[in-house]
Amino acid sequence: MAVRRIEHGHYYEDFEVGHVFKHHWGRTITEGDNSLFSSVTMNFNPIYFNREYAKTLGYPGVVVNHMLVLNVVFGLSVEDLSERAIAHLGYEKLKFLATVYPGDTLTSQSEVLSKRETSRPDRGVVKFRTTGFNQKGEKVLEYERPVLIRKRNP
Image (cartoon, one colour):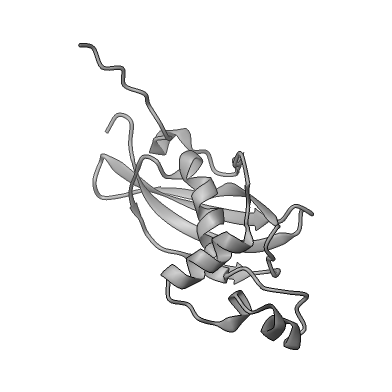
């Protein structure tokens, strides 16, 4: 039986400094998403699940867990940026820029900031800046991340 191999992701050589990826889809965050994420990560800050408490702090209702916002924005970028990654090398300059509420739809885009060779010929490091937006086009999150990525032809 023949097996069809489907290629996914980009190699180091495919990235060009300055290129901007507008990541597809987007994701609407529901109150259930927020409650479940906060519970399974054992984050019991009442601002994430208690509407009345959030209102006492000046918010119109429950706030989406900031780490869920980060994970959704990051997840939207994976197909374009890091499916060929050897290693995610961390987050840099992470900034939460606007509050996200249940019902908001997040989208993201990433810019290639830099590329550099490594001491090993089969890989290189590419640095990206990823920005998350809500449905109004407002920036809600921004960060940079270096990624160790395979080369096509080492």
